[in-house]
Image (cartoon, rainbow, N blue to C red; front, side, top):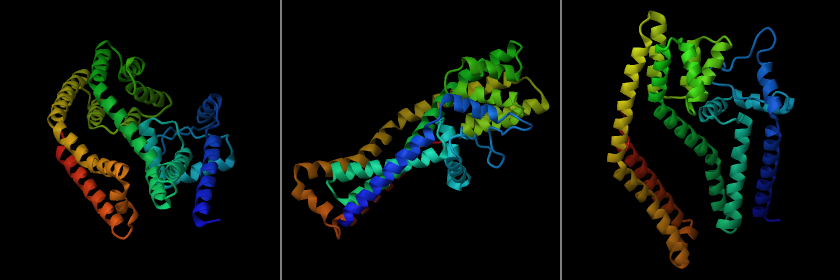
Length: 330
């Protein structure tokens, strides 16, 4: 058996084990989740939704799926990268544990390696390893995309949310009752975030802490301004409805200005995308129509590969520079 076959078999075995582990970790029913959530608050004390050390939402960790699996998840969750993953999964509103997210990394690496080795590059072990390296970052890119989409949706809905909040306060509702009305009537993801705040307050967590937890899940400057106003009003008093109305107007103007800037910088962003992907697409196109012409660039490891590496590095630097130029802070 050759060295390449051993590597392929080893990676295949890792994929199988990761799939089995992921299936076991995910094999929990809704009843198990309900019992686990209720179990936090039974007895003399309850386990808070957020840890004391980092104020991050604790995901729904299966406590009855096995002591070994639970121990693995606890070990990963206490690591620095585990806390970071837990925070990112909470911000993306993905119902995954840290162990499941780690298993996704392994599965993604194996899938990218297999696709490159058996389909794209026909047994080239070097390019397959590079593809596996790319697959390692695929779950992180997906989570980052989900976080970005959720944040944009929340900030877009925030002015209307504040309008609903103001109307509820003027109707005689308290701050918590107004937030409960928002949790019933607002669209996602605003509904889920305010519902979590209401539930935490009902479980005994202070409103300021619950709002701080929401700010940690939704890292928004506009939301930070709103929460600061609410906390100040609770300490020194004042007309909260008028304050929120002014903030809502300010946020609407900021959203309008961001839209205008995005239109004005659209040409630069499209230019950056073309500069980034046109050389790569052209290289693959030439390699497809004339393999003898471009093949040396991929086959010659002494000269071709360094040239490809330098080219990709320059493309990355150019893309980052253009994005920095068109990214105007408001």
